[in-house]
Amino acid sequence: MVLLHVLFEHAVGYALLALKEVEEISLLQPQVEESVLNLGKFHNVVRLVAFCPFSSSQVALENANAVSEGVVHEDLRLLLETYLPSKKKKVLLGVGDPKIGAAIQEELGYNCQTGGVIAEILRGVRLHFHNLVKGLTDLSACKAQLGLGHSYSRAKVKFNVNRVDNMIIQSISLLDQLDKDINTFSMRVREWYGYHFPELVKIINDNATYCRLAQVIGNRRELNEEKLEKLEELTMDGAKAKAILDASRSSMGMDISAIDLINIESFSSRVVSLSEYRQSLHTYLRSKMSQVAPSLSALIGEAVGARLIAHAGSLTNLAKYPASTVQILGAEKALFRALKTRGNTPKYGLIFHSTFIGRAAAKNKGRISRYLANKCSIASRIDCFSEVPTSVFGEKLREQVEERLSFYETGEIPRKNLDVMKEAMVEAEEAAAEITRKLEKQEKKRLKKEKKRLAALALASSENSSSTPEECEEASEKPKKKKKKQKPQEVPQENGMEDPSTSFSKPKKKKSFSKEELMSSDPEETTGSPSLPKRKKSSPKEETVNDPEEAGNRSVSKKKRKFSKEEPVSSGPEEATSSKSSSKKKKKFRKEAQED
Image (cartoon, rainbow, N blue to C red; front, side, top):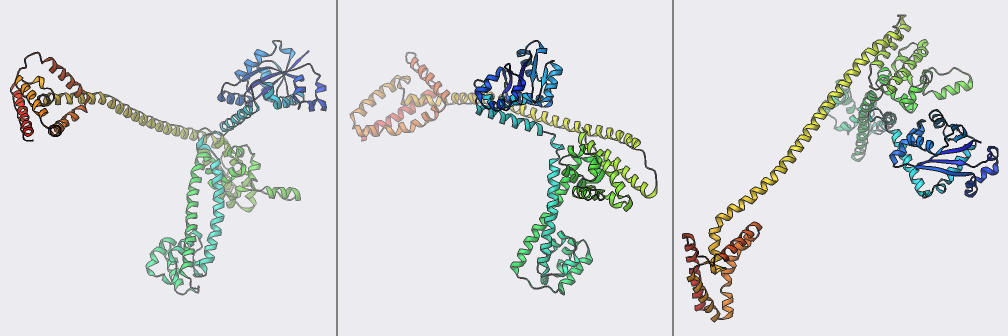
């Protein structure tokens, strides 16, 4: 008996389920279909054989892309080869997608089935999947589905940024809307300012120029020959500027208040800014069309090509359309009305705005529109599927349309399509090679700049790292030099005040004598009298303690002095002078104490 297995693809992994021995005919009964909704009854029909979870979201995205493209992923292959029986003839695998079923049958040799009973079983598995797999909750399954859905759609939408046609669709739609709005607003300005200066409407026809003139003129009574140069700059015509000046002197318009004039000027400035933005948007559209569809824009122009792309939905959709559809694209209402009334179908749609149909005679308009639609479909396919965008093919196709137009008028036989395409292929290869050369040069320049920047950063970091130990060494050497200079000065001060043992024997006796005299004096006066020299002498101590190395050197010097008590001290000239100065100070202290 053939065993029926079902493969279920989920956002968290692959699940392989086996059906218990049940007749297929009974599964299609309505009672059984209703029992799919009941978990207990569904467990009697289906059991989980194996579950292969995805290790990460990236792996899940790879498997989803493989299933959608009809490719057997390595994870799926491993699952099927491991858990399905080795006798392939006795196994029937149910799959939801016919593409992946055909791929499994071709690569692994398992018989696959889709639709019918399999759809009902997969419906139940999808409903009760979080109950079939242990440790999987409904909330985690929903989160996994949402994350995979976002990543899958993001990967599908990710195209070349420079070849995106969405911007063309939006810009041409905005351009059409701006044309309508500017026309409406300029008519409002004409009507509003016409109360004050009605003759200006007949002289100036352009809307943007009229709004600029309304800003410059303001009150017509203040218009004089000083503003004539500005009028000539705006109108680009001296006669028109003179006519405006003459009309302002003999105008029939009503007087206007200052506040109304301010409102008119502010509104006209808005209209002028809108018209300037419209021009910048048009230049942006031309640049985008030269990047996305250069052949189509070279053939029929940027505006008509962008309208065709917008009406089709994308450049890919336009490339898929046949030439007959491109011919009447934009005239759907007329087409269905003609089909309903059994009248004449339209000959052209959006391509009517190209210059070729307007230049053709009335009897040749249908023929040239059909020929132009053929060339437009070719150009759109070249733009859509070529790797390096180039306008060579569009220029050659335009030449062919020109030759066909002259053939209709004069009878001159045009060149064959094969010869023109051969020339276009040669030129396109040269243009593509030149473009790739430019791109390589740009890439080399970018890499050189990057290398220079990295080298500069590395050099700066090495300088910083090398300078830090040198600075530390210099900082450590400087205090040592200072110490050597300060040692002969600091030793007598400390000997005179703090450590009397290092001085001569005579000063020792004097110091002991001075202590006895000081003790005999009043305690308040004795405490107050020696405090002054101590405060004066404490300042060098505080300065020297700030440097830890100097403090360490001092402690070493003090130890040496303690050891030198036993040895005779060699008295040099500097030490003699220092001892004399200290003895003089001590004599002063004694005198002050005796006087007190």
